[in-house]
Image (cartoon, rainbow, N blue to C red; front, side, top):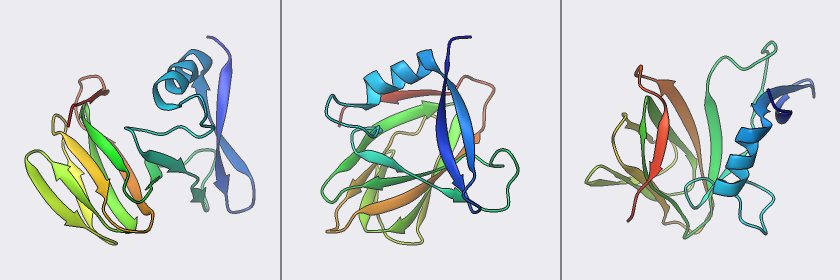
Length: 151
């Protein structure tokens, strides 16, 4: 296998769990998600990944959970997945989620579930950054894919 890239996940004691990603995959991620002037990947147009601190875990976190931030006026573009369900839990900020043909106003404590094959997007309509957790559950034997959609 090609070289590995380690992405840090901070633990309470200051230790880091390193998630290993094949360097070829990392190059794809950089091309798809990072502009020439960015040092942090941005997913689906405007969702910037944030660090998470895992407490009392062993060598790797037990769940697939990501934390993101969408700047005021920015969006996480409409996209669709196969093979997984995403649950977005809003932590801070206010916005609007487009899921299928519905639009839902969201704020702290709200959760939106998007099954495989369901188009979804997130708009930050507030004046502060909108932060959310993305809980990913593999739900099908089909491969996990993501496809960006036109608005």
